[in-house]
Length: 399
Image (cartoon, rainbow, N blue to C red; front, top):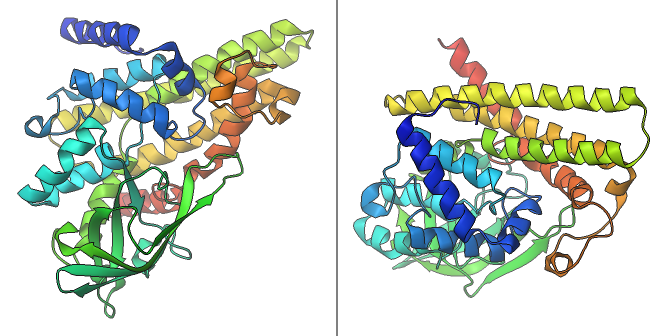
């Protein structure tokens, strides 16, 4: 870590490290290293979530009364940094980090009792129904409809890029409940169980070969109206609240862990064969530039932590962090492919079968191309970077 810690913060860091040394198995560490996407496969991510739940650390950001830890902003940052440094499997945020804050802020007491415990324990696994064909970052144009029929809503339409829908047993979904007027005014936020009669989930295999994404089709799907969060047609307000949580968080810990691996891979690659000294020096310089960029991002995130501790609103900080973090993440994957050189062209899945034996080429070389291809989407998900720049510009020009 590049910042000075108080005695209490150092003691907390040591507590986290001791926990990780005891509970984070070699298999889970391997899964964390080999996770080329935003988060790890369901099997490993959920297994790690349940271990954290036993310690009371699965949902640290939640209010204490719902199972949160009551940590300071700096403790949260230290926790993220230590998990990334230890190669812990990155966990899916759809339940703990996205829909849970919405349920806490807008849900009824019955909804909190019904859904929060399963998210906290890892018993329930959620997916997000936001994007649609022709309605990617422009969520206001969504057309998936829900019509009230007695005690149910009947849903027809489709959602796309639905991450881990093949594993989920619950979904939170934006649906159109009213037409006419401003499009934002006719959207509602529904939570319901899946699978259900009339729901079809079709896989979308990404260019990296991963099955993270899906298209979900709704054909007269009946879901209980008690799954409505907030009031009907209030969904746009709730969706914006959720996106603040999706875009927020710390990028620097994960990026620093990635950089550490790149530096080790570069040392090994240039030591394994004769290379032009200028080539090695050039890569060392580019990695140093990336480290400076991570330092700058970390300083920005720490400033945000101090503002958060003072009770200041998020403002444009999540949008700034999303642009800087995602583009730096892409830059690191580009360096990874260059370091791997011809090995990056190898098509070897980093799956469980390969964890039982030695890879025929360096693991980081195999990882590099998968991460590169997967992270092409980093500047699109959670609101495209072009949209985030517009948000930042509009805020700055208004002040």
